[in-house]
Image (cartoon, rainbow, N blue to C red):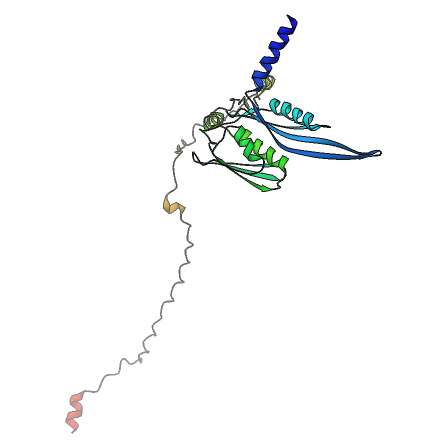
Length: 270
């Protein structure tokens, strides 16, 4: 009976593993120089996906190649994420930088295929994207290129989630990007903070009875255009013109005014 149960568990594990496809992207041999000679180890970069929107990436290290690949698969299954897809492509273009490698992913029309090189092509295929374009800038290290592509796919959000996240600050995305939500203690501390007592206004003195009533000032009163203009300095008035003094008439002789000669007298002499 015990043997039958163990066999059934093994079958269940095999059925679960058949959903995912794994592909070895890169195998590197690392040599460490010791006193007795060189010690060789291997690193295997493995990608695992189900071709339906799930993708994982792992880097396994071991003294043997097979063991390194097995470790890489286990790490990739632990780090699997769900990516956002629109049909067979991504909803929008995205640019991501990892170390010194920058990758640019762009959507493509249906039937265009995957236009990518290096480690990006198998990652996009295992993620379920059949129409996409990828371009690398900077370093062409295979590990960095694979990690940059994985981070770019992981950071893609659906437009609906992005809109909901922008409108509601308390909304939390459970998939791959978490927004910090205030802890209960912080909210309680903010509520318990005492408020500053309001300052008492100084009492106003009563105006004397003989004082004239104040004219209320309108809040929206605006100064007139004439008042807004700068006051021009008036020029001082010109000095008063000196009155012209007419010369006094020539003094008349005491005997009286001289009589004019009579014209008739002149005619008589002739």
